[in-house]
Length: 175
Image (cartoon, rainbow, N blue to C red; front, top):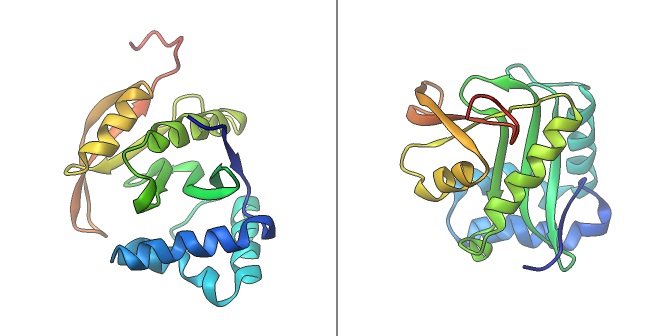
């Protein structure tokens, strides 16, 4: 696999990120297009909001301080990961997505692996990660990254069931 790394949102990847957002529109995945489509209208404002969120500035109600990173491959944004500085009950510490055209190529496993390292840097040794019960690919990605199944929860806001995992430290006694 090519050299992958996480980058903070920046102007350097503006065109690539806009293509990333549009990929969700083309795939008819409205949830992610609504999340990232704001960057199409005003990229600078979008970036500034991401920076503020990572520093705990003007956090909307129900949110927590969240650092966002873009998975970069050959100067292209192929995925996005959010590392929450506190656990959200139905979302855990880490949330990630891979553009539709880059799925099933190992990027999901890598983005979570890199996000776990970012979580450790902010003091989260064993982050919590959730996925929809019908998202087999995400479940496998979490398990490949040493995820221990904690149980099933119900997300009232999204009206769906989720699997909840703890990413165990490689040196944990919980294995």
